[in-house]
Length: 178
Image (tube, rainbow, N blue to C red; front, top):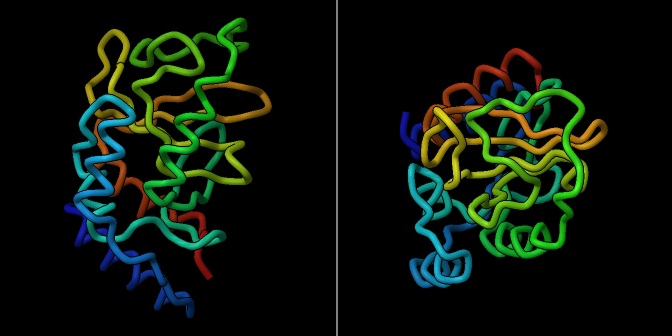
């Protein structure tokens, strides 16, 4: 599934549930280049393409279904929001470990500069991130999620495009729309 198919299927899901999906207009190539320059890596694997189609979605709009410790509806961030949260996460401490062993596909720590947030729930108590610093057996561009209380980071999908397929299934099953 590509990003255009995902957005179209998401609009169909919204329509089936009597709701309307109104994502933001696209990010510009200039916006994307500036963001990549600041974070220090290329945004790829579909996420860049999605920002080219729609630059996030309004607050309260479910755009992704994610499973961390439970299924969670998440909003798609604008490129500016993503970079702002990336900056904010640099201030997080690395002085504690999560209460159970972390999936080894995820690098150690809480604030890796090669993790770019792109979706959130409840004021970033759930923060979905594009991972350019995978751990042992992980893949460059995999998707991980930080979940607060209890604090933990979970592996979500091997790629952004895989996330899209899983997300639609989760949103249908959990009835996150409508």
